[in-house]
Image (cartoon, helix red, strand yellow):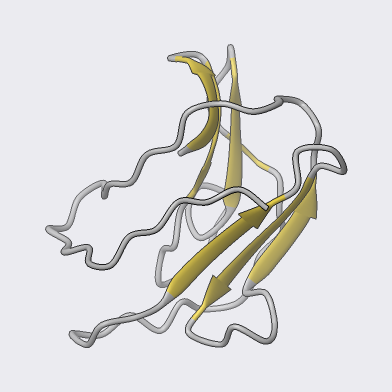
Length: 107
């Protein structure tokens, strides 16, 4: 999650293998059930190998880009200015996941 204001106001990215309106999207939670901000149709090619993920957000413009392995082209992208700066977190829904070399920075 990112742009976390409180438990009812935040963004998150779901990197599901098969995108649908509730997975594989950039999501907004704004005092209501999650809403997909993207219309992502790109499969996230998960396997048992390590993958590189980058989330880049510009709070001023609202631009949100998510990269998966290919850092030259976003896997999904949207512009939304609902929330300003906020907390950042990382986790998983149903699967056990491992995270390594996590970096959070401002630019």
